[in-house]
Image (cartoon, rainbow, N blue to C red; front, side, top):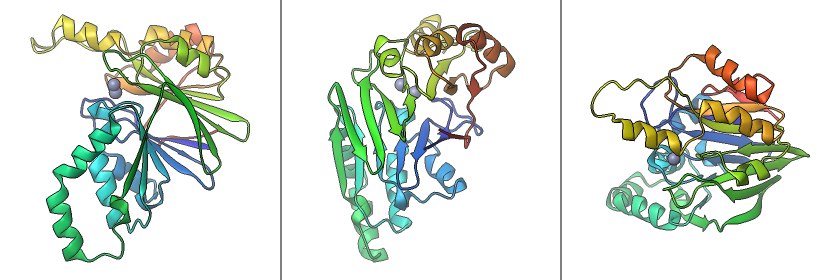
Length: 275
Ligand SMILES: [Zn+2]
Ligand SMILES: [Zn+2]
């Protein structure tokens, strides 16, 4: 199994760190996790066609993780996708997908009839909403989903992918939480979000102390993530979803190594990790 980081950023715009999204693939399966800003450009750089994606999984419906959904679907149609989309996500995903599709319905109708392409299957979307905990299979990948703590977001999930006795865990957006550490146990790779302390400077009055405190408190900080990985007994820790997107890498590694006992991998867009 392979994990490719398509976007390692956050809501802030950064041309080196696109919006959060990842690709998990095996010889037969290709699964996207989230579709942040720039996902189709990154897939294109990777030479992966959106026509061949088996499913899209949402960790949660924050805009930085979902904003390029329509771009993904329309570009898959342009790439001659001939099969329906399968989208898995939290409660509310059906409503969200329907509203996005509805916003573009008139434009799409006109385009479909005028461009007369062979298939419009890319616009058939099956949405499967998560319960609190569950398992499903896509081709040769076994997937487990579980709730994480990103409150006030009501429904946020992490995922485990199992393939040939190897385990990859993706944290999604979360503050440190028991469930994540329970399901991430002995992962070969733990892909975890991080909020880097001391790197955001309060530059103007628009960013208040309260904003800073609230943003930090529903993520996992640089002084917590090494402990989370240690308790989870992860073999490898890969970091993503950097808040902020620019920071001192050496310092971050040092802080985390103290808790984790090993160097973490600082994720970069288009980095591929074999698991
Ligand atoms: Zn979020
Ligand atoms: Zn996020």
